[in-house]
Image (cartoon, rainbow, N blue to C red):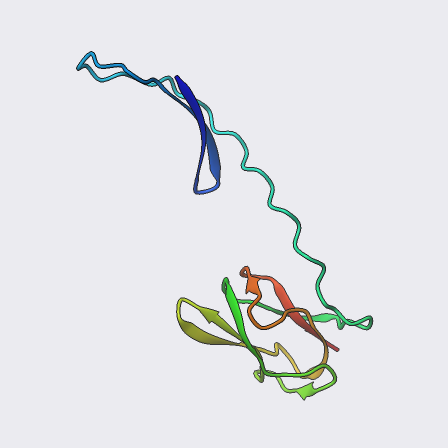
Length: 123
């Protein structure tokens, strides 16, 4: 018998495989309860400026940072593109939720991000 640990959609399963069983009849496996998936390593600290703003600019989808449109200290209006996110081969602008000044850019081009991740902040 061999023991394997398999992760499927974030669920971890311990699986036991018997070798050399050739009875011709199907072998029923005993159910094994899923274990909690191991925690991912914490992400690196964001590159936030000391005076990071209170208004968060968040990713609407998981993807990769394609381009940074704004610079720290730049004034932006509600709806202005701050960062361009690439997801599923599409370029998605991440826009300022309100008027303000860019206080920090917390990502770099090429960084992978999850939906809801803070990409920048505004004052």
